[in-house]
Amino acid sequence: MFLNNSEYFVYIVTNVTRKVLYTGVTNNLPQRLVEHFLQRGNPVFFTGKYHAHYLLYYESSAYINNMIIREKEIKGWRRSKKEALISSFNPGWKFLNEEVCGKWPPDRLFHRKDG
Image (cartoon, rainbow, N blue to C red; front, side, top):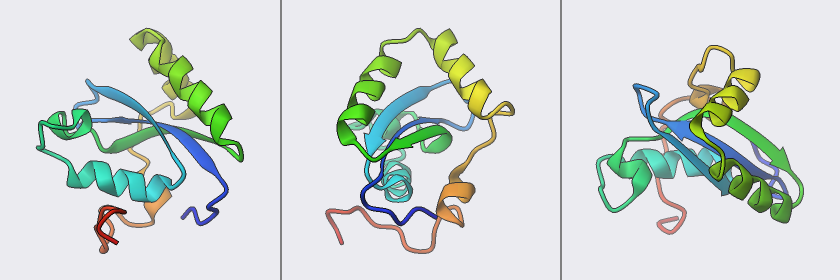
């Protein structure tokens, strides 16, 4: 589980069929995954509309600006390049939610805004 608040992440999540890829940035990866999970089915959010809350890829840095730049870079790639990145990190495209959160879904589910 990640507890270092001075660490920032760029990540890629997908849906259960692995057809959708969403790239994001956060300072709290486990909590962000929970938030995507709680949005499932909500068409207002891309990840909610497509039920994209399954983690496939992540990388981290102590510098938020590096992660914002990296997020924009990855978002600009074609799908094939994103797939190659995921495969180099996670060859089986295994969902990494339990690895990051300890349990999936966690017992405590809340949006940061809810506290």
